[in-house]
Amino acid sequence: MSDNDADAAVGRLALDADLTIYHAIAAKRQLLDAVRARKTLELDLSRVGEIDTAGFQLLVLAKREAQRLGRTLRIVAHSPAVLEVIEFYNMVAYFGDPVVIPAAERN
Image (cartoon, rainbow, N blue to C red):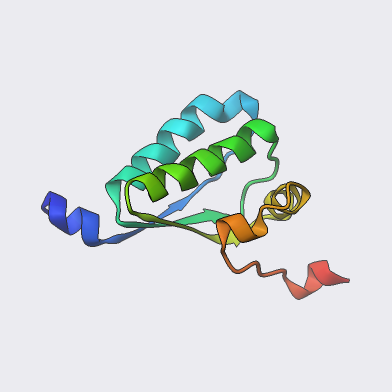
């Protein structure tokens, strides 16, 4: 696959680790590498059990880096913890991704 093919492709990254200060360096590297490698990156955060301010800042950084490069970053799956933090900071519109809440969690 050439560099142009990679830039045109949609990539998907599923994070399995918590987005906390304890994992921030590794997560930052992983997120930025993935944003830079694909024209469009779909970010699956459904398995993130815990997120703190450092993790939230990484999501904002990745979104800004994608915008700076003229790329697209979409969160395609939110864990309850991620959704709670994004809503707490009133940033749902900033990320602009559809937020799907499973029926079992609505009650």
